[in-house]
Length: 143
Image 1 (tube, helix red, strand yellow):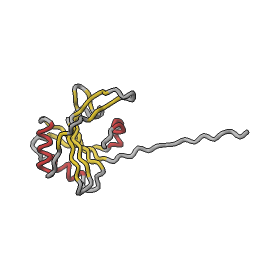
Image 2 (image 1 turned 120 degrees about the vertical axis):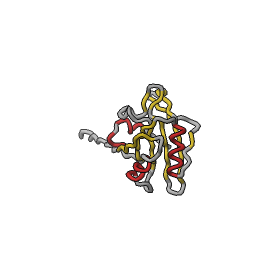
Image 3 (image 1 turned 90 degrees about the horizontal axis):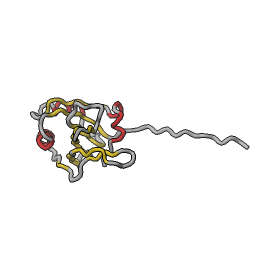
Image 4 (image 1 turned 180 degrees about the horizontal axis):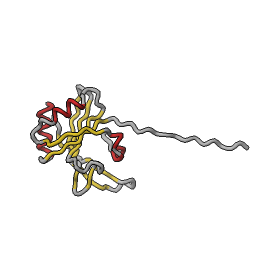
């Protein structure tokens, strides 16, 4: 009898979002207001927080989240607080206070956006990140 063949399935993670880290000494609503004013968008606090769970489904942390869905450019903005009760959304970047995610972005140049965000009074620093270089980014899901 012939030996059964083994096939290996390799899965390559692709990210559908751009990721910008933000350092700010202000609260989340104050930062969202500044970003709204700059970009002429309307980030609004979500009814539900961004929930981080383990593999068994146990809730590890809940992070404050704001969102705006740009119908014209088919782009979704999410502003998520990195630090919450000692837990980090992105543990590799503990110095970041917030992350701005742009999902399905085809309309906004990240370099220009980064420069513009630096002009917001409540922002201390803006840093674009490649999600492929951050291990915990694989667990980030935006619907």
